[in-house]
Length: 306
Ligand SMILES: [Zn+2]
Image 1: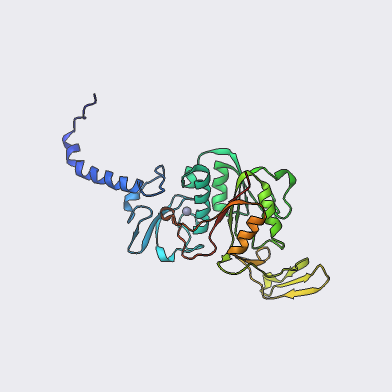
Image 2: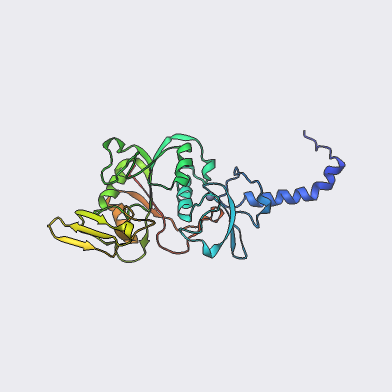
């Protein structure tokens, strides 16, 4: 039988404060989806527990770096504002959230991912802010189009096929030269049976995907560095084309926007490539600062057939 420990006089005088502290901590740890092993130093200085919205401000913890911050909820967009600790955006935090939820059945912050070098994954030019810590936890390799480790999704190396538990492609496939369908097929082929494809692309809710250069065959992009970029193309039929009204994402050259996907268009590509269990993720996860203002460009997951 256990007996209650005898309290020292000074401990008794502290009891109300301790109980208050305990109930505040319980409220914090019971927040939906929270990981209780996060480093909580300084948590009592935050205006609310992660996920709480007070006076329109969201209290959040970054699931990439663990930094605590607050942000006006109605200013939280897919690409801004960045986490003050690491610069992560809603899109990047959502990728970690979805990856963790799929493999660990809980939304863990990246520093709390288990060590799983057996879990093989790859990223396609992923943001280094999460790519480096992810590579330290899982058997993950970030890949690039222009440097090693190189992965051209239109021509993946044969010895990579069927080897991945997951593939992350975040805001890349809108830049791949047409036909984009082959990129979706190769993404599925890279995965093991049941492997996870984690995809974000900008997409509009209505209509069909708009290919900006559907007949691209032999082409050359000149002048993006001078501010007057021109795309010159010779079609398969020999016709010469010139495009000047070009859209670039976050730079020039390789970031030329080749298409604007639509929701139906992305879904069709995933279906035709043989993916199953296609899901669009529109749910917020406020403790990690994941909030979707708009019903477009949301992340998707799909799986290779088991
Ligand atoms: Zn961060």
